[in-house]
Image: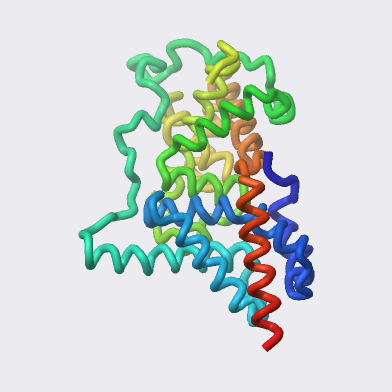
Length: 212
Length: 81
């Protein structure tokens, strides 16, 4: 499992310790942000170059940490750096290998709930099942559930993974996510909803069968 | 009136995230007052959102240590000069 820091308060606690050069603070920073930064890089440039891109971004972060003025939050700054690095690589790749557009890439991948759930008048065919574990705490207390969740998240399209990470886990505002990923707010809202619906279906299956 | 399908497929996350216009919000609220199935769905989607908020992505501790050590040394090196 990852760390238990609250992403909304981590910045103010971490920054002074980073500036003082405290080793543990660097570990916390990387533990907390490396994977989310990788999700952002993957969404922009794809999986193959994402890790390299994040490593480059970290170097840039270290180089500029002392000049960080706090005009944005630390996490917005980090995600902007990694996104800029990924976009710059993407531009270079485009000139040498052709285009890779970042867009809503799963219009037809079953992102919505299945059509069989609806009557022709748009009402539910059957009521959504009741969930025995009806709180986040109860669900997350099952190791099997956490495993299913990580597996489902890992299999999301990269743009959905990135917006879900930034919005739900990092608690960022839509406008910040738009700036980081270079997508419109309406696209981001669609991506978030489709990603949540996929997790919804996974929870539903888990509740019914105990499996992913 | 808004259908259950439109509510679930299009508006549910926007409703939870306060991204609907006043008119759309009113329409969703009215629907929820009348529809137990959609109330259950929205409650469950809220649980999903909360699960995602509380679930950190898995980390590779070996990589964390290696990257943090590298950054820490680079930061110290840089600030010596």
